[in-house]
Length: 177
Picture 1 (cartoon, one colour):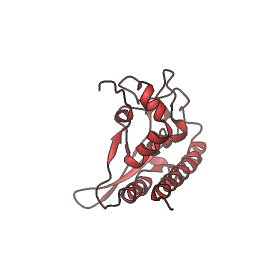
Picture 2 (picture 1 turned 60 degrees about the horizontal axis):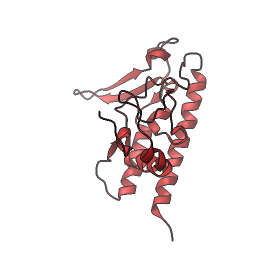
Picture 3 (picture 1 turned 90 degrees about the vertical axis):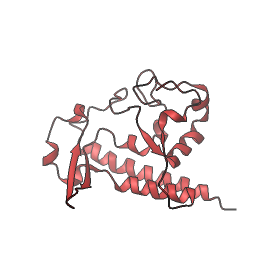
């Protein structure tokens, strides 16, 4: 019998693979400016949320960690270990796969104009100014999130707003916020 959850998991793994491949190409392109290394956790903050479909994958793959281990103390991502390394790196969510890269996103203004914004981790800011980079040299926020939202809708079987979960809330033993 065909399990619809297999389709959702396959879709999630494809999205993660696509994101990792594209982010990897950008990381190579920006290698001279990237200061991100194991233990650099400046972008790994408590407020990170993920779509429920990603949370479901983390719960399935890291049940013992979530049940038996404490989260990292508040102020940084709950999944960091004492040395600042990610305890779920292979199964890390989408947002964690693009951290440190030059980011760009588009927003509509009240006047109906589309405005581009850019940002980068301050540790990676040295080098070509963000505004001088071609758009393809930045990670564009939006397309991958849309794919994840659609996957979440398929998982739930509805057209409602996709639910997001705080990473810290996945732990059985939660430290206070």
